Image (cartoon, rainbow, N blue to C red):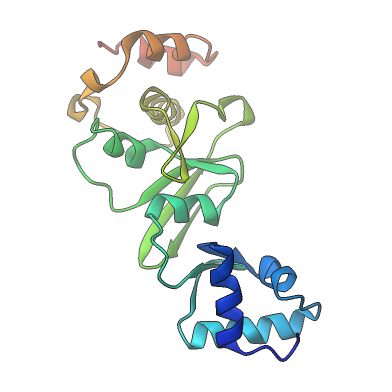
Length: 196
């Protein structure tokens, strides 16, 4: 199937119902073993605006309804939406952040995809918990999003004005239960000042 047309290729892709597809998935789905052939087909699909690149080797199928948060998860699979984006999502932070913020096990970095800026902040494996799947994307729970933010604040990596947050949206018991196990003095010093 090396000479498959762009139209036939997108019909086959659409038949699967996928909204985000990788170059490797395209290779398997269309039974194309030659990497150069796959690359040229992807170029044609992009040229005809049948797919749009969102990250290295990952594409959105045109017509798919994909949220900014899903795109964030796609850019860095080992990540979940957190910090300002999650706090805003839950109504804790009223100011809408321009940048989509996520926590990741990978190294910190910023990138742009489909006109939106994405920021990924590294957290250690021992902090990589407290997230859930919502509407096809992974996002920190309200309490964990606040903890993630305070943790990076305690390390001098992030700034946030706690007085501007609507902390009544948090579950007090859940928050303090989560926070007590984080053995980092500067973090615990901030936690002692939090009034819920």
